[in-house]
Length: 237
Length: 299
Image (cartoon, rainbow over all chains, first blue to last red; front, side, top):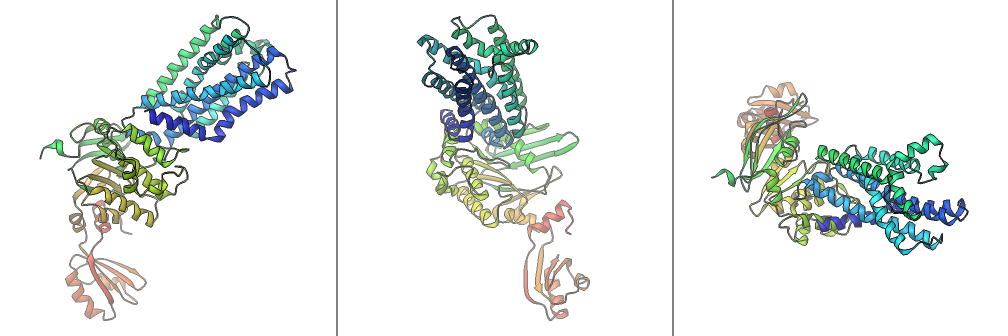
């Protein structure tokens, strides 16, 4: 399974449009919004760094995993794999591990841009805490990607995951703070997994421990989406 | 002969999709070392039968055994390799990487260089899997099926959509594999492939086995011979009245007589049509037997 996992990672690194889209966009938007529109406030640069890192990692999880599983199912590659001793669960495991490995560079690059270009300065412990927190924050969206990948055909999967990525990232206040939303929209945003996922890291930036009441909402979404993905996976295999 | 020695045993296999019966009770046994063609028109149930045989679909009824065990166990033991229809290769990988990744999943893989040579993909190992011609991609699929060193190879319409040269190369690769007592089952609707490659033909139509026997015997079940000749201004109706003739095709000056008794036909043909020349007598192609046995219309 290790050789297959390695292949999976190499294939992704070779897919230039995908890399540009998952890594280039969040770094680019981060710099655009902070350098051009941000006015150079340090707190904004830090908060937005976390938001864009999560947006990028969400994209890698949602569109990376979801669309690819759908493509490989539609085009029949999974049938070829079904003839080997690799089980559907093993295949899913490979996809999941590859996705988790690939979200890491997205998170690290946005952070690097924050540190090197925007001059974000945080205590070392905060930097170290942000990486696993952002990683954890990505999981519900990877689960959602898996559910999409096992539910619809390839051309539909790509569209659905991109729409969900933007609805969730904009709606969850990753592009502009929820405080700027109209009141009713702010209430909606606070119910979304994307807001609650980013909140874990935002709280750390503000000097709190990550798991407040909002973490319960996040955990609820995480469990629900993993269950949803598991159900779609079992239905399909 | 014990049943466990047989490569494939299907008993009473049935499969319906809604109102459509795809497989209506198939029984077949394929012994180790046989090269068998599963022949039938489109929609005859070939692919569904193959999928059920490989455990990719569950039958509604019936039993499948590969080497006396379930398809899943036979696959896990690396005893079965297959080239399926619509099995696109994984993009953004090289051919060599794909082969190595699949080999790593198999319990007793063959050396990569050996498989690459056998399948004729040695020159393609560094090529990207998404930049291959149809024939090249199909040979790579064949290499992927071989890499686990299977004793049974199942090929589902492996040459559909390939041109003549690519088909010839593909079958040359398959023949290279069949030497060592391995079993090959392939489905096709190219009759000449069944004729040239297989020792035995299983004819499927309407989800049932309609004929099963050595290729020569199946061929003999239809019109037994054909007489071809060149005859200017041939009159088809008159030719049909010749003794022993069961069917006549006229294409310009070229005439094909399908005969039950080609000797009687020839004796009558030569005096009646002195202009007939380039005369050839041959066994009727499998196509004729195929059409008769499946009840399809010749024209």
